[in-house]
Amino acid sequence: MSQYWSAVVHGLTPYVPGEQPKLANLVKLNTNEHPYGPSPRALAAIRAEASDALRLYPDPHADRLKAAIAARFGVEPREVFVGNGSDEVLAHTFMALLKHERPLRFPDISYSFYPVYCGLYGIAFETVPLDDDFAIRPADYLPHGPLAAGGIIFPNPNAPTGRLMPLSDIERVVAGNPQCVVVIDEAYVDFGGESAIPLVRRHPNLLAVQTLSKSRSLAGLRVGFAVGNPDLIEALDRVKDSFNSYPLDRLAIAGGVAAIEDEEHFQRTRTAVIATRERLSADLASLGFDVLPSAANFVFTRHPHRDAGELAAQLRQRAIIVRHFRQPRIEQFLRITVGTDAQCAALVEALRDIL
Ligand code: PMP
Image (cartoon, rainbow, N blue to C red; front, side, top):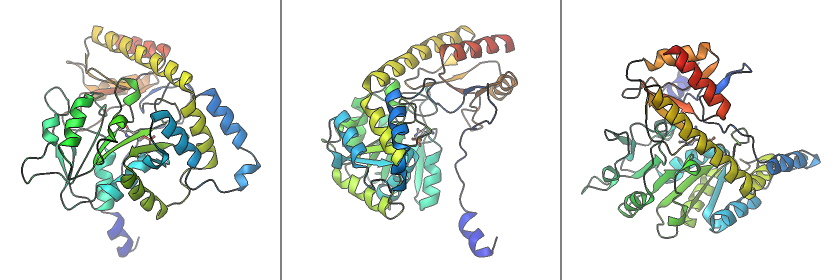
């Protein structure tokens, strides 16, 4: 690589996604996918769209999808932005809304893509530790004199901890920071949280970001969206139109609309995941694990006497994959995605055997 190119790209520290193993027959509990399939109505819509229509470019504004999201969440289409997975929505958010002379603030244990986007876009940031119970303290995000943030972002529930901040505290943070944009990353909100979307009308500095990857079981389709004040949405659209006019293909738009409209499938499958999470948490506790209370489709857990990296390796030998982060403070934790009842039972049996 020439000096010129390497100077640009060598400064970047890319995000390392969770492993997507090629082997079949694994119990894959490492990247928080939904264990039940997507809405059959979404699959039918995708199949119908897989036709001669693919000859044509998709709608660059994805108006049908914005309309479906707006109707589902009781907002206007001009309050909705859509993108190719919430990772892309977040990327545009960092570029359009979080670049500021004051540093962006986020928790030090959080979604590890945030510092990556900061590196990519040259955004200064400061991280704040979680409290002793691994919760985000709202007070850490309220401005203290001249130390107001240039932007705030955190997931709710947080990842990888699964811990939830109540909506009243979210509103305190948003109302306390009128000088900057507050982004709530709600990738996991449907598994036990309360969305901040109903607050966007009262708070023009609030952006709520969601995805169809988790609670709607469409990680492979890549659809994410954001809801906020039309001024924020316009800023996101400007960045998007400067980057890729057609981020959502025709299959994603068709499948996304049908998935958003299939409320019955959504409610039934997310409720099943929540019930399994509670059983899994209780089973892990009975094996001696400490389990953080989770409002997400994963649990974050540690065994007081067993090394987490060792446990993950031994599970892997039994064809069960969970996530282990080699990161200070959480290196003794495992993040385990809630699978089907059978997958979780297999995990618990394997752990009983290993312990
Ligand atoms: N936010 C958080 C907190 C996540 O864990 C993830 C999934 N890795 C995402 C956003 C991105 O999800 P997607 O791009 O599939 O919408």
